[in-house]
Image 1 (cartoon, rainbow, N blue to C red):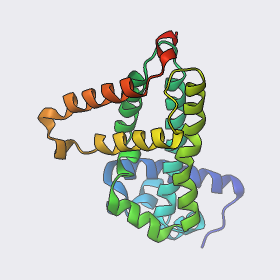
Image 2 (tube, rainbow, N blue to C red):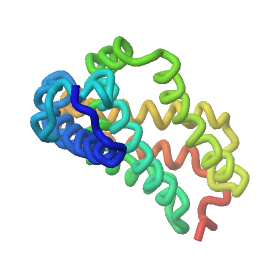
Image 3 (tube, rainbow, N blue to C red):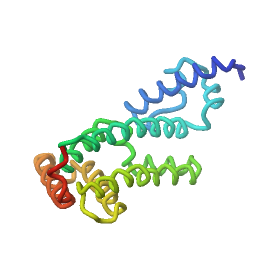
Image 4 (cartoon, helix red, strand yellow):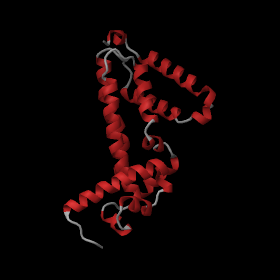
Length: 201
């Protein structure tokens, strides 16, 4: 096994992350092998395990980074003045649908593979962080009168349900999908908007 300097390690790690982003986005976790990743990164296959215990661990690190970027965009969207809650939901869903990693998160087989390969505590921490992220935003919106006073956890659950529904285009039917989602978002937005929503500008 070759020995690398700290600088070389950092360079190789970045190459693996970049290779992972490209390969996983195109082929998904299941169809991407460690060999594919090391070939794309230009390193020996055995060297991969100096950096990651499995391809699932590499995938998970990329997923976390993608979620951090996505959350930053969602937070900026939520903070926009003059925007209704329905408009926020539409913008957030568009961001989710454009991200291949987030789409893959709702693949049951993929999630089962991650649960098999990664420590349970690490995964639990990851999935509970959604609530940690959204809860302060929702509480702030409620305090300003933009959203009704319902349990933040319930509103978060509703948002999750909407996201899950958005990945059921085939089940809903392509010919009805856009109108169905648009009406659903509009109704959720109207139902959750507080009395102060019209002054949000």
